[in-house]
Image (cartoon, rainbow, N blue to C red; front, side, top):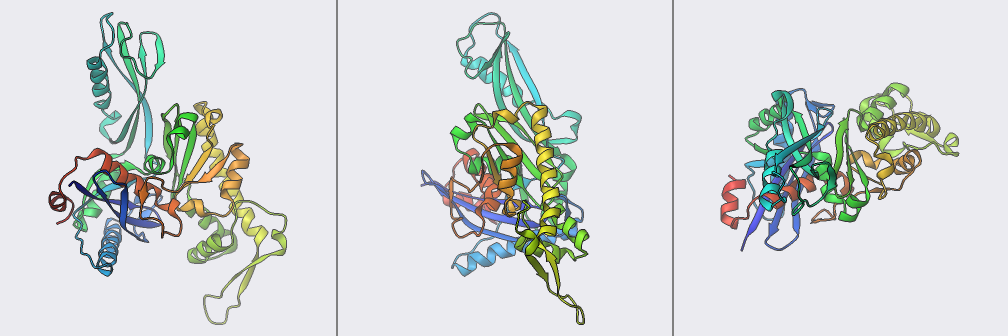
Length: 400
């Protein structure tokens, strides 16, 4: 019986996550172990100190090994798929075409144009391909075709969305992982991984936006007519709200993070002025401080609205705002922010929900499953795209 085991690693601004997924032939993928520790050496979703990032990776590997040992097992991870985020991720619309000589399009023609599209090199040689998504076919002047087989024409064309990342940023992650004796496999975009984990097919067909809210950046992915229509990342995330609170109220980053987590809301409510949040003294002789809830939420609201405005501007430029008939789905740790869904619903004029992974088991005990969407989607990708092997063969590949 086939039994697949995969690992996925996410090196984020605020946290480093490692997860193990297992799947027996014909069964649902299960996240058998997941560990999260605070990141070091990462800023705005990019590694700034390789040695510190290596320590974070070592720490999360040890955490996984410890969890497995507590459950009576043993694991030694050798490689993992890399989950990538950050403003350096972008997407380009490209097209591939072949001549069909006035004949009917055959299955071989379709295979050929698809193969050509997937071989299109990223521009400049400075980019690493994360994903090539097939969109519509065209036959001569007839566009918007989903299945061109049997249609007559001279030229068959396929439009694709080429999602790439800065090659150097990927190499930084590989260098950090090498220091922890971990080999990194395919780099995958966090937001499209999260979308795979939380979206249903009818949402992709009707039109939906996924926002993957991280600490240093926010990824976005728009699906329409069943395929990925636009994607990318914006350099604003949850840490920007933390920084704003720290500066506004002269707090340490740890105090500001606590304030955001326990008291902040993306919306300014009518009763906020009467409520106050208390900040404990950090050294002897200092008194406990209090800050009005309205002041906290005013700072938070400004930054949250700025992010939504940036997303809206991107979508308006591609005429996608009015195609979100299935609304907006929020994933990532930043989706925890109180009332963020309400703010986005008001600003974007469409329904908003928090996205929980739909197609994997094993995350039921997680406090906020939406934060695990990207890592779950990466494990789904691995299970979907790599050939099944026996359990012993898989141990040789994934584990030392």
